[in-house]
Length: 327
Image (cartoon, rainbow, N blue to C red; front, side):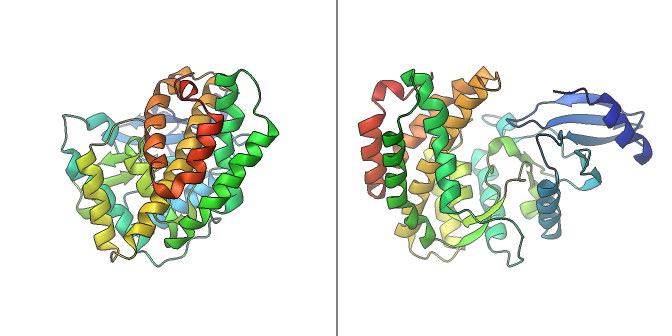
């Protein structure tokens, strides 16, 4: 990564934060880096997104949309999209992941998170982001074959195996079109949600990492929240969350919704296994490998749904149980 010290100084000086103390914050799986700034009792967060690798414009667009809708996204204090910097409101450190388990009421936090999704998916305002289409579903799911399977098989995935994978997915993906298309944030999980108890209603749930938002099936963000790669959500909380969401959204065809939920879970968890293998092999981040067993458990549960029979048959034929593990 290039040294960004001088560009950071050029961004911060004109907006009055040039002499701030900078403290690195934990990053994510992207090339973005974050710093907490402290200056005369004020705090802010600097997003550093090297423009050769990242584009802050989608983040800024979605952030402004969320703020205008009454959600607790961080306020944007300054932005230089060409240099790849955004100065943000500091929402604190109380990520759901950090205050669970034991330090907070899981059910209360997840009820609020579900209420955020109910409000988000009921929001009629348009947002100009791409659709979640079949080509994107397949490209994401291919990460399993491109990165994870070579790790455990010791060889690239053969073309016939990939062709069979696409055929199985194409057979089940039409099921996701039976649920409404809404703005989906796509990384809506405990590592990107902040507890803000001093606020009211849905504002008690702070939102991070939403720059990849798309227009897609409303069930997707529930999968992201409840089939979390980083923590186990209790079965009681999962059941409560799904029931609360479906009741608020008018019920509808619950069988169709749960089938779409399973299909999206299988697609998303396959993608995540591949991403974690890529983070290890390409980016030198081995810690993500330790999360893979939990993701395989989620995937196994998704595959139990009768709608996933073609995908389950593909796994049985091409991914032996001994491979479904941490590489």
